[in-house]
Length: 295
Image 1 (cartoon, helix red, strand yellow):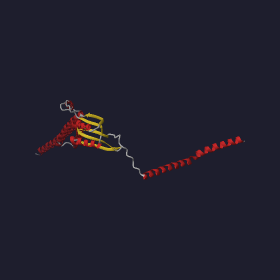
Image 2: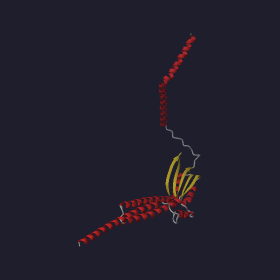
Image 3: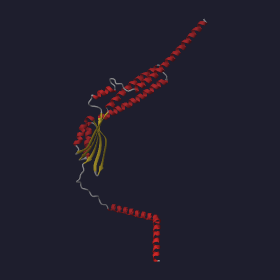
Image 4: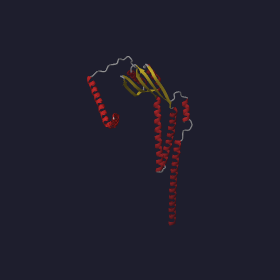
């Protein structure tokens, strides 16, 4: 009887040991699978987008057929006007009419005439209409420069990168859930979590750049330098005479002249040895020569 109990106890111990070994092997396998999966997802995120439907190449081909590409438009104008303030009011009306805004404005006086520089942000589809209103209100256009930056390729590439990174993030989240269900090690969970955090930062950065390009292409930038027309026949107003001001100017001039004379006297006093000694030597030589002639 005791012999049978010993055999049963031995079999139970062996079964427990085998179960523990199997559990450890399973945990090691899960850990190895997590590490391999993380490495695979990292390589997938770093790899460039494939030329497949919905990728960068196919999207660019689709954009090539669209006439309205994503272009950042900028215009710079120098206009001569009759009234600077009237032109500023006209520009404010343009902004209100087309749903734009004034991003920068500067007004100053030069020779008692007002000058101004204004930067407008206007919807790109209304750019030509707004420029036409500006030309109508100006006497002449001294300079007009337009430029455009085509950012279609960059925009499409950003979209493809965001989609790839989001797909990688989804797979890593599923992998993280699987590792947690299998009670994986803390190192594996931390590695996957760190990679997910890094991917989320990259995604947010790319989305921020995408939104910036959308705003820049939706609104054109117009910088207008306003110059008033010169008035050649304007009468010069004489300055007002003030005897106290004249007296003050005269006193200041007297003090300045006195300072110059005092400075000159100080210089002569300091440099006198270098002037008097040569003069004295020359005078002695001349005197000795005269005495010889007399002798």
